[in-house]
Amino acid sequence: MHDCPLVWIIMGVAGSGKTLVGRMLAERLESDFLEGDRRHPLSNIHKMSSQQPLDDGDRQQWLLEIQGDMHRAIAKNRETVITCSALKVAYREQLSALDRVQLVWLDVPKAELERRLLRRSNHYMKPDMLASQFATFEPIAPDETVITVDGRLLPARIVDELLNQATWLFPDLEKPWWKRAGGDDSTNSDVGDAVMYSDIYGDDF
Picture 1 (tube, one colour):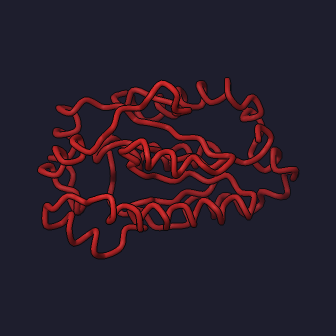
Picture 2 (cartoon, helix red, strand yellow):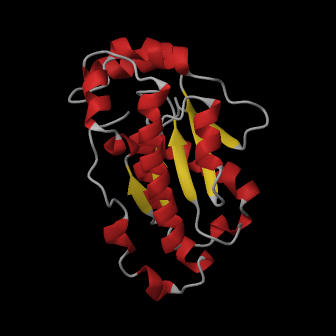
């Protein structure tokens, strides 16, 4: 597993910086990037836009869509960064059931998240929904293989810190992912165009 491309899941509540950190990590790794919120069905988006919290049934369809993206990334042997709130232990277990997956949690105090959400526009997740996310959130358990990073750091520092922690688990991260995949420099000729294969919906920082 250590010598293969990884699927990175960048997790956190609304406003924690998942999109910005995920994009920066993908750029650093020269990997693909997927904004997980893009996988919400319209019914979920309508509920959240109406200030209605999602339930487990709503989230299950969304998680299955993200799992499909993870399977495709693994099948193509491509390093990929995906954002997903993954607030419950069961959700994180579902996403980490596949091999070659590393979960990252961005830890941000509630007061800071409220400040960020008040500044954010053009996004369906409003500040009033933050309380429901914290009510849903189940803290990271000691036995979960999750890298936790202080989400108050500057985004570049967050990426540095999570990669420093990940290198202890995956020493071969010092190699570009396409070399870990068994390729050479020519394998990566189109990676610059592939870094963000989905459009970014808003700014999550």
